[in-house]
Structure formats: structure tokens, C-alpha cells
Image 1 (cartoon, rainbow, N blue to C red):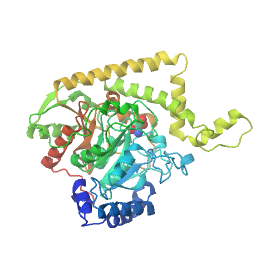
Image 2: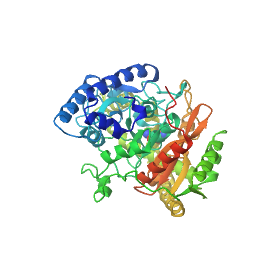
Image 3: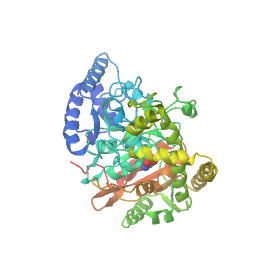
Image 4: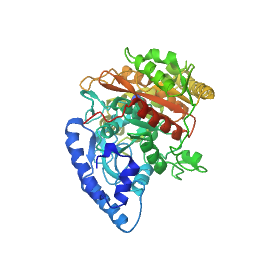
Length: 477
Ligand code: GLN
């Protein structure tokens, strides 16, 4: 069974019907994971025996007549999501051996539906980045080019076809930029749609749990399983009254897509053409492309960084060697804090904690933090007004092609990469990244942004366009 050629529903069906056992499927998957991990550095941990045990348990349930929506489906989990069976490292060397006492709700729901966690995936220092370049284990390599970073390890796992689904987090674009750089489909759901219980997010206002797969249909299949009210995360209260997911049987005829042409001026040379071509393809497919403006993107990016740096300094204050993280030998309390925090927090996390503490200090708070909150509000209104004129917005996911794996990017350049993703995070709106075209040998993704809970519409448009332009993410063998 070639996983990249079938849908998640079909894979689960073959396991449910007994045609293939979950154990057999996972055994093969684990082999591919080990082989590909050598070159691509996708996993912080491969589950091995634990995954096989899970698979056997699923087979036993199926023998007893149970049918499970994700029976035997191999899934990867980003290593900032707690999973009690394997260490949860958060991208910090200090947590390499940390076993969380509980499992994140989204992981638990996937497992209850029959999915098998085959490994934890690589991430930036405390998830702070969209390249994996600041990971203590080094960057994940892009399956399309061994000299470039993948952007996200989950996206690389899906692009190679070793896994059908990656559960990931996205604060300012990590999931979406990874999908863009690896030529797969990544969904950041509506804020509150998926529980964040068990997610170690550095910025509470913007961190969300999302999924990556090779089709809109697969993404929605997974969303239907993980979405919905969770009493352990109050932000999911918005789901209390609604059925999870929206299904893909959606009429996409005549939808209007907002195209903010001026925003595309920010792209690196050579990429604008990909989106101009995408616009033509969407028009040819019968969508009405509408010109509009989103002038606040640069200010929104700045607001994202001011707010997320402030939140990360406050969220990371608990990593002091006493409550969390390894404690270092020291002569007094101050030395203990500084030595322990110095070894727990990597370079990017230290940088953000220092900036964030400054931003929240007297004098800076009004100047930066309060202003950023105002911008946040304006950005939400700007996107809401834009979505008053159209059904979906089209934006790039990344400003440039994936970075070189060997080069250390300037941190401001890395932050600027989030120009198109971070503003969307401020709005809480759902965003789905799908292939737009190619620049040379590299896939280039676009984001479709919709109204709250319009994931089903975005996924239906995605699958229709993928069929129309024949840009399946199956190019890697
Ligand atoms: N690049 C963004 C940041 O560094 C997004 C990170 C993320 O989504 N995890 O803040």
C-alpha cells in the first residue's frame, strides 16, 4: 500500500476491513522513517516498539469488530506537544529526557481514533522559528534539495510519503511555511477550534495546533477528529455548540478570492510571477479574483513580534531550574537562576526573553506593548473588512525560498520571513497553505485565509485547484 497515493480514509478502510494489519503497516513505516531520518533529520525520536504496541492494540480492537476513523494511520507529532510515551524535548537540550505526565488532547484524540504516533519531529529552539535552524539537533533538510531547510519537519515527513499526517503547532507561520517549502498542505485552524492542552507554546495569544497532509480532504479528516470542545482548554469554548469540522462536500462554485496585489511586492525576485500565474489559474477555474488591499501587513508583523516576545519572556520564566528544567550548581540563588536558565534556554529563546523583558519594562510598555495591542485590533478589523468583500483571501506563506541549511540566517531576516503568516495569526482566522506553483525546482505555497470555521471551504478549493493545476505534492521519490 503506497501511502501517498491513497487518502487517509482509504488507508483506515483497508485496516478496518482486515486487508492490511496496522502492525504490518507501521512496521514498514518505521523502517522508512529510520532510513529517511539519516539524511533529512526529521525526528527527535522514532517511536519503535511503542508504535508497534499501539498498532497491535488497534488490530485487536478491529478483530473485535470496532471500526476506527484513523485505523493504523501513521502520524508524526511535533516535539512541543506533550506525549507521555516518548520524551518531549521542546527543542531544548535541557528537556531531552523529559517525560510529560500527560498527553496533549489533540494527540490523544488522534490515538483514540486509531492513528499511530511513529515519532516526534524536530523543531526550533522552544518552537521559536520557522526553519528548524535553531534546533539543538540541527535543521531538518528539505526533501526537494539537500542544501535547504525544510521549514518544518512534519511537512518533510509528509512530503516524503513516510507519514500520512503531521500534527504540528503554528504561532507565526512555522506549519504554513513548512508546508509551502515542502509542497504539501498545512492547516492552521480557526483559533479555539483545536485544544491546545499539552502544547508548550511560547506565545499563548497566537500558538495553535494544526495538521499537515497531502490533500485538503486528509486535513479535514484529521481536523474532524481533533477539533471540538475540551474542558481543559477554555479557548475551545467557541466549539461547545458546534459540530467539529465542516466536511469537504462543499460547493466552491463562484467563490470570490481577494488578491492583495501590493502585498506581493514584498516577495523576493522571481516569486511574484508564481502568484500572478496562480491568480490566472484560479480565474480560469471559475473563481472571481477581486483586487483589494491589506496595507497593515508590515505593522502587523511588528505587532506579532512585540506581543510574542513579551509573552515568551513571561511564559519562559518558569524554566528556572527549580520548577522546570535541570538545576545547575551555584553559590547563590541569582547564580542558580542565571546558570540554569542559561543552559535551559538556547540562543533564540534567550534573545527573545531578553527582548521581551525589556518590552514589558516600565517606559517600554506604553511605547511598544500597548501600541502593538492597538495594531492587533486594527489588523483584525482590516482582515474582517477584506473578508466582507470576498470569501477567501490569497497571500503567500513565505517571502523567500527555503534558506540554506548550512548558513546561519540573521535573526531579523528570519523574523521578517513571517510577513505574510504572522498577521493572519493575529486575526485568529483559519489559514490553509497549499502549493501555488514552482520556482525552479522549489515548490511555492500560498495561503487561503477564510472566515472563522471555513476550513471545509478552503480544503475543497485546495483539492479542486490541486487537481486543476496537477501540482500534486508527489514529486519526490
Ligand atoms: N517564525 C515565527 C516565530 O519565530 C513562528 C514560529 C512558529 O510558528 N512556531 O515566532
